[in-house]
Amino acid sequence: MLDVCLLGTSGMLPLPNRWLTALMTRFNGSSLLIDCGEGTQIAIKEKGWSFNPIDVICFTHYHADHISGLPGLLLTIGNSDRTEPVTLIGPKGLERVVSALRTIAPELPFELKFIELTNPREHISIKGYEIDAFKVYHTVTCYGYSISIPRIGKFDVQRARQLDIPQQMWNKLQHGQCVTLGDKTYMPEMVMGDARRGIKVTYTTDSRPVDSIVENAAGSDLLICEGMYGDNDKECKAKENRHMTFEEAARIARDSSVSQLWLTHYSPSLVRPADFLDRAKKIFPHTELGTDGKTVELLFKD
View 1 (cartoon, rainbow, N blue to C red):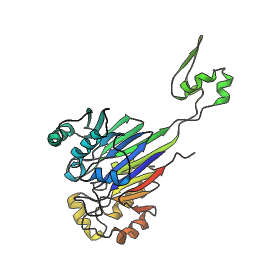
View 2: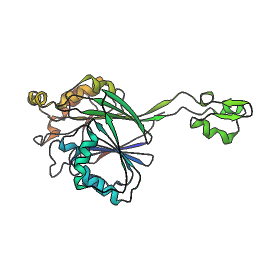
View 3: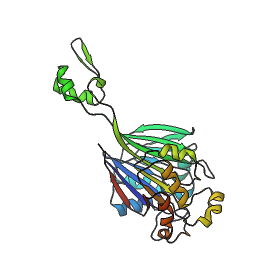
View 4: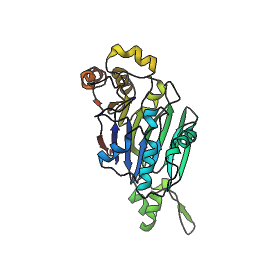
């Protein structure tokens, strides 16, 4: 099970009823955050989720509306009695940018670990999350993220009994460990079925439509994608600033065969996103407007 909360949906600047875009997930007691604009910690507080379990913070890029809330959030995490390290992931230059921001948050009771992205696509395994970071196309270096929760195959009880493997050894095999009994060694693949379908969420903002989004979002249970502009008359502006319209985001969702699309990162000038939703739904019917605090609980499917 993966809990997903879209903390805020605004691009460029926060509005009275729209926090800056950020996403938070929870899995197996560990929380992950993507982007941290001004007000993110207030959005977390409004949601009622905890700061202490935040183990990983990913950044798409270093424009202020995606990272300016970090110093305050780090201080709040520190005040939650956290002492375990927090891992930060983002484009090259991450440690330099964070060090500059920490001028106003110099002392923390936990270590910060940095993973800087330099390749078009990189994979990171951490805290049960399988993270695929992929480059998109913005005015600065920018990455999208696919967050996957894998699911192992079913344990074959009948086969384990045929092999005379003691029941107290089954758990080790289920968790990928080999078991040696006397002169015999049993490997997980002898009693484990093929891996089953897991859970996948893809998050991308601040980009023009590019193949890397379609390729990495393929088969996602949920795609959260920027829809900076609702009106197609703004397409020229979207191209100029390297953003997307609702319809462009819907085409990505359709082409990547995702189960559901949430639009986010709205322009401050987009006062009524609902006025343009039908245009996107004609292209991809399972399109929904992202709203602050919008949450879903994604379950494993047999």
